[in-house]
Length: 258
Ligand code: PGA
Image 1: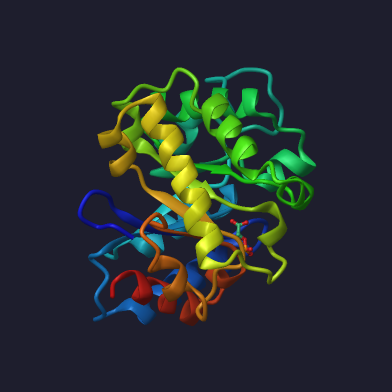
Image 2: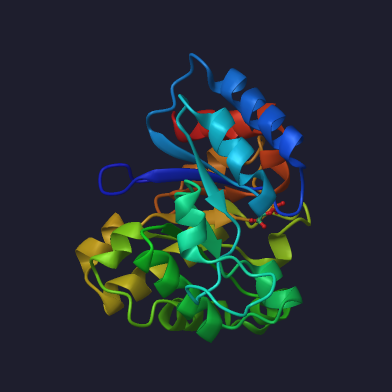
């Protein structure tokens, strides 16, 4: 973390978990865990399934927890059965949206081109974006991690202005570390977050790069969060499994406030 030039963001990614009543319970449990503790050094976000959004927002009222969605379509409206637009998310009070998660890329055929379209739609609607990039295990083993994440970052941000970058968070998520219990070492996380920061400097400027929040995601948990967050280029976490357990999520939030 480097709080001097950028904000730290701890975001949960609930994936396809929790029915609305459980969403209320989980947000209430997180609220109870963080009540009276220091939270002002980081932003706290819970990205939840679409049907949980209303309950989550209601439950989060009066707390520092902000609510995000897990994807968004790029068109404003029309014949796109099953999709949700940025205006729809905005209208129900969503503030953040995850775009380009590796599970979307892997299982639902999303490409950097469609990720880029989604980023533009979200920004146009006034949403903050958590843009995910990261290499596959084969790519790391081949030694092309830097090339892969640089290419993803460049294509995903095509046409995004320096001013828009205020509303973009990047999440570096090595695909081999997601949901596997295998975490990148803090050095690996810091190195790749640093590579992404250099790409942003080359696309925009050193000051934009210094101000951009770059999270690490992939089996971040209550045990390893403090060490990962101690790295200069790791400005928070995108947390799957551990965000579904209020006490664990609260430990990660506490680590971001040390
Ligand atoms: P995980 O998921 O923490 O369960 O590995 C992270 C993510 O997919 O964002």
